[in-house]
Image (cartoon, rainbow, N blue to C red):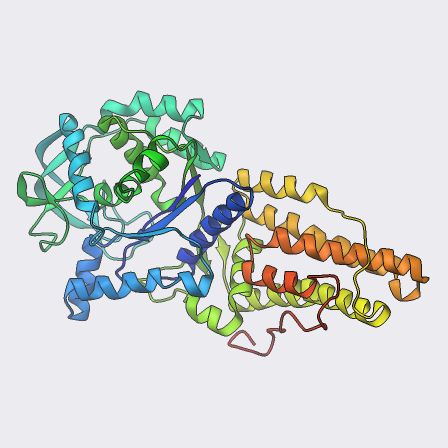
Length: 472
């Protein structure tokens, strides 16, 4: 499976919304690797945006300095969020990216032409709109732009796109987003402006081949990363031969990934992605998290304050498959205390403590349970429903805690006690296996606590977060 995320602009540091998509992709990658499947998990940054240029001008620093600094912050999420990506691609510095964009330009040349264009442009979205304000909530007024640009004959691919989506050869989930894309295409596709004047771009970006007065439109440039980053035999392996090529994207950029990108590939005669999973937004006070607005939750600061398990668990346990999710630190702390400290941590600590108290730490044989969890988690992730998948894992915790209360091992005769405690240790071991794609560090602690024929002494796995930070 080839799993990719969108590549965000680097006009500012990352926020929790970026962490959501990265963590979701990481869960998919870890899950499929655990099933023995080959996986490539790729992410990166979109360096060639006018937004980045304007941010550098506002800060009074060279564009390269700002881009390098903020791109490093995105790549640096790997450690704090415990991400397992195989490749991180920067469009301004990856050695094969510019040449790859030029190859796609040449391959689509039969569908390109020049004409004068006037329209209202949103720098925040990096696209033209027929009227204002920006539908995605960017507050800066739309700019009236008039220039000679290169255009792509998107209209030529309307029927082909409809057939791809209706047939399911290009799978878009959830269904509401698929229907949204279908409605957009069915309404008629206009040809797409795919270049900008080099003057307006301040000379930043990839020059149009043979026309140095224009730079390639940032989205045409950025979307190409999914193939330009595949060097040598990787292109044949992951884009041509791979059966599943999955893009994870936010709802605000669905048109680019589900319409423009497949049309580009059709024009170039290249293979298509197979699945596009669309997530909704994280909000704060009902408003979309935004780098430029300065109201975004910093994922690194949250991990520093509450730990990676708390942050990942909130993103996976609380964010619905459909609909925005409003974030507060209070909600993160409440979920972590309820599930991780009181639920998971309490279960493992009780089991290990009882094994030491009654059996001197020696693990008896027990019954293996929860055979249905494997299928439930896999099916939920096939549906790109991370909250349902996390809930399926959590049934092990809930059932084991109920088992403790029902059997009351401390009251049982020795033979029954051994059977009950052995079953509970097996449940904790099973939990560690299923938890790994979601909370790899927590899973490792659980596995260590119940490993071997004689368990190590009990130790708390999670601290209660209430009273530790700004959420109090």
